[in-house]
Image (cartoon, rainbow, N blue to C red):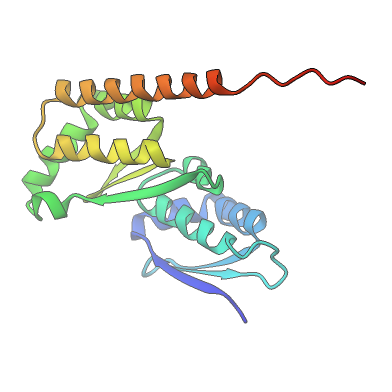
Length: 195
């Protein structure tokens, strides 16, 4: 039985998904053993798993990559989703501020910051990648980083001071570093083997 999934991306992102001379589309198809049918008139993308493909989960990975490209990520960053430790999380800002263009612009400005500094610091502290596109904020990262990045972004959306958000993130980073250090300290030394 043929496995397919459908996804719709914004029209202005179709060219990015296809890439120059179809390079991005071809690379996705070759890497994951799928066929992409892209309707440049509607932005509809059909992902079909090739019959000879060995990994049936590839169709879900490709769906996430296509969705990430549709939400503003470049193909190279979206490709990180091929790593099973990484996931994509999308926050719809209209759920928090409504559809007012002014409110959306204000909140997006708070997340991005002057010259993109806020977004860059969010990415650095949470070890994630963040794209602010249209009325959404998309995040690619490991699960622990995704959750804390989401919380930090929602704090900004709700009007928290940037300094409050940075303090929250620095505290989280210290906690994570401590846990990682303890994890390594608790691992017993391997006993030397006699040969």
